[in-house]
Image 1: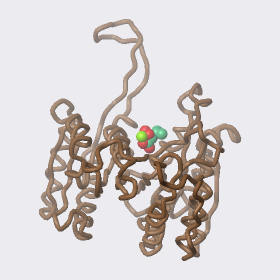
Image 2 (image 1 turned 135 degrees about the horizontal axis):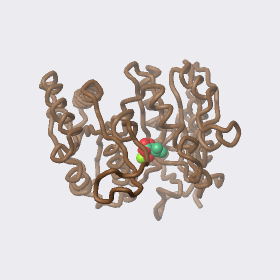
Image 3 (image 1 turned 30 degrees about the vertical axis):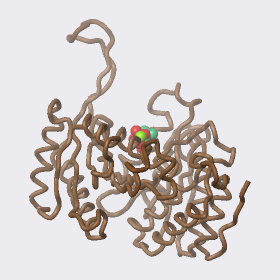
Length: 374
Ligand code: IPM
Ligand code: MG
């Protein structure tokens, strides 16, 4: 097993460091190599995704990624901005299926912005298509308008597009995930459900999306399929989030809805993600960003990255046993009351990045979880 480790910018290096310590604590046989990415790579090598970093990612079985981005790079031309590193990795490696589980851990129910009765037991899986849509559609650019409301003035444009095979393959990922979750007893004996989120009432792209979802569904009669317009989905997510099981949607809608779903769980600092190609190779990253405002202060929550390492073991490295050990360890440290500032509440123990990592390592190796009550 070869893991490429790309810590990136801001809090990226701190949180990835803790996840790597957790992987070592499991005593698995793996090789790893670390490389620069994002703003850190731009500063050292003049490009956010240097050739050597891309080559390392291509050669690895899996990639553990921190976060990229810093305000100081926002003025750079688009091709050199840190965000291009993650977009480039997704595109070059064909990581089309983005899995973003939103799970409300029982001890953190109070941290949610919704009432506890709405989020207790919440367990949804957002599946976002990741290499198509308006994110990558051509043509795009700026020009002088020839028509429209103000001909002769400056305009900008992007292209929303999906091909049938792109929709088919993400639909299969969604139906299979729903089937698996139902088999694992996800929704208490209920059959799996896929909610396909689109804007078929307005957009051609998403009428094709809906048509293809219906066609592919014919192969999964055991799974329920429902369609929902994206505006309604945004509303239902805060009205009755537990009605969802698997949500599948395009790149842009998925970007927005997954942040919304994250907040339901209390903290964006808790949520991992997997971005997979068709052959179980994947890139694993927390869904939060680089948080430059708290970088280097030792207060960032490493749990989303640690849980991303668990997803990596499960989906790319065929070590579900080790993934289970990480997930149980995280449950144990939360149950023991340890909290980084982002999930802290009255009566719990406030700890830093390092102490949280120490606690997960202790839980994995069967040692007592250190109590650092302050
Ligand atoms: C995400 C992020 C990225 C995206 C940015 C950093 C380009 O918001 O992974 O959700 O828009 O996909
Ligand atoms: Mg996003």
